[in-house]
Length: 256
Image 1 (tube, rainbow, N blue to C red):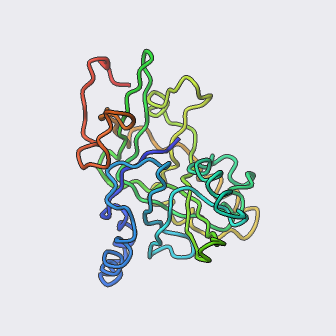
Image 2 (spheres, rainbow, N blue to C red):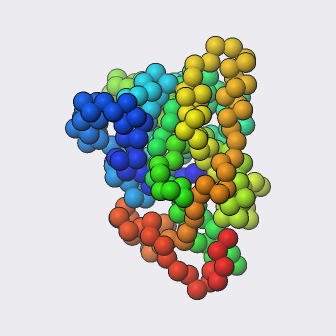
């Protein structure tokens, strides 16, 4: 799955910088970044942080969105709160089927840039968090779905998103080994050359099939992982800069 991320403004500017539009970059930094929770050295999706996403309707200029997709048909804030924690991730294999995601899968896809993500490794009854990132320390482009929800109380619009997941590659199979789960998962990471295909509009069933073909494991050799300090409970340091640094555990004589 993908419930914990690290992302910086620098990472989230990646797509905007491709155009070398200095005015747009300045506007993002001055107007949008203050509305987010950046920088995020660590945040759980259950805290519903606000970050920047690049949507199919605005592929080169990001929008502020809250993690935890709220479908358009949610009636009120009570229903939103009941659903929110269950829509942090969307299984890629079923996004065109599940009621919470199928409209967004067809009409509202997005990309979220992160510095890396965290996952928990289980060994002999103990849990060890790991930070996973690109071998070149480049930002990872995560495939997502977004939704625009009309809040009946405030009468405002809320942008929300979910991170799409896929089956784990060999590295993530070793790390994401929770004995309570049936299958190891990982976020759907898009190679640069496939980002545009993820954002392309869907016109017919052939386009749906093209999107489904993108839901693949990311090559194991492109990722690096190392153990970090606790992300839960009393040992948790919070959203501090050093939280993604490597920590040595005597129980881990060999890394996964």
